[in-house]
Amino acid sequence: MTRATKIFIAVASVLALVLGIGSAALMLRLASQPGVASEPGDGPASPPPIAQAPPAPSAGPVGPTESADSMDASSVDSEWLASTAQSTGIPERVLQAYVAAGVWAEKNRNGCRLGWNTIAAIGSVETNHGRYEGSSVQPDGNLDTPIIGAQLNGMGVAQIDDTDEGRLDGDDEYDRAVGPMQFIPVSWNRHGLDANGDGVKDPNNIDDAAMTTASYLCVAGDMGTAPGWERSVLSYNNSLDYVSKVYNAAVLYARSVDPGAPAPPAQTVPVATPQRPGASRDSE
Image: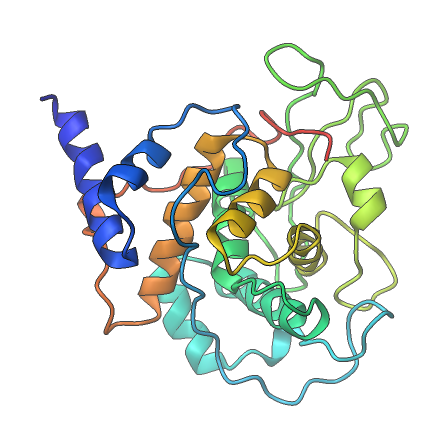
């Protein structure tokens, strides 16, 4: 048995113990090949646990006009934020946006059951929370340097011809994924939200991008079930390898804010490193 095989089995066994999933089923799930869509119910027996969130203070009317009952990212409890940012490795300003988006989804997407840790896991896999190739999220929520993904020209990736004349991605031939959560223009123009109330739906703003991610995921339905969670994440990126990475990261983030719960040993769980932005993005 190779060292890599031993590590793989250790990951599957520990996660199975933590989540109450049969180890054989989970190992099969983690071994799935990228780029192959699965049918609902083909994955793990349970979704990742929903991470604890800070007590929600009374929030003012912010976010998209469809709802004044949103949570301003700046209203996230600062003590909880600092502690959780340290335990998860997520920058505080980015974590603010993830938590606010999760609270917004709870209030505005009834029955979705989306935890902020799943939003954070997607942000981790996509761009390392907006830190891909030296970029970073500034205090106002905007990236200091826009993150533009690979050209989706059909060469090893999906082919998506330009849909916005290069307005968002600077490419008038093919679409590219944009921003910390890596939305392609056709999806952003259809689903994009203005979370910070500045009148602009900006994929390079973490507040707008995180809330749009929450809304987009909830379109697929209840994420509180294993098939529902998997279906939603596959709608974001149709790759089983991608789903596994998001799943692992979501579990670790949930455990990081619940010290009383067992967590996988860090040395047996691969750190979620950002894929090349837009490398396997589907059109929807």
